[in-house]
Length: 148
Image (cartoon, rainbow, N blue to C red; front, side, top):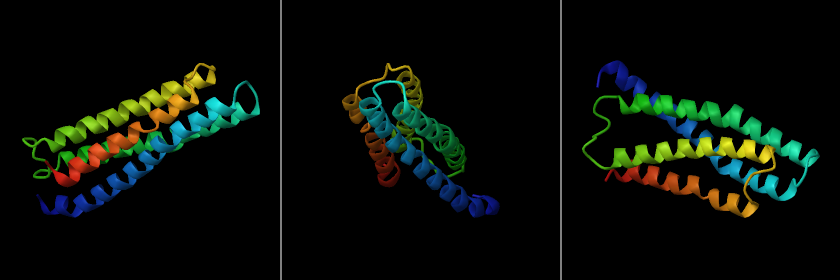
């Protein structure tokens, strides 16, 4: 690793971790907002409007930028020479987890639009889906730390 890259690496890694934490916070919270939206906002009016504003701001102001920052910093780390050994399983399982997380994020965006139209899932179904980011987080963290 060159000297300038060795100097930047911990900064990029720090930025990546902060971006991941922000993105994950949104991925954990948005399905919970959907639960409340589905269970308490049964018709048009104030409760539904309040949930819609919170959901939209969470997606656009926090989750969107955080996911982009996560991907950019993560790719910068991946392309740092000597960091990732692609002959091992862990980079592939981490990549699958990150792609799964991104697909889940996009699924949440679709669900927000469905909730606006009154066609979303039930509160119970959103509670179950709220476990998806936890499962993906476990896969990603174990992959990176254990490096199997």
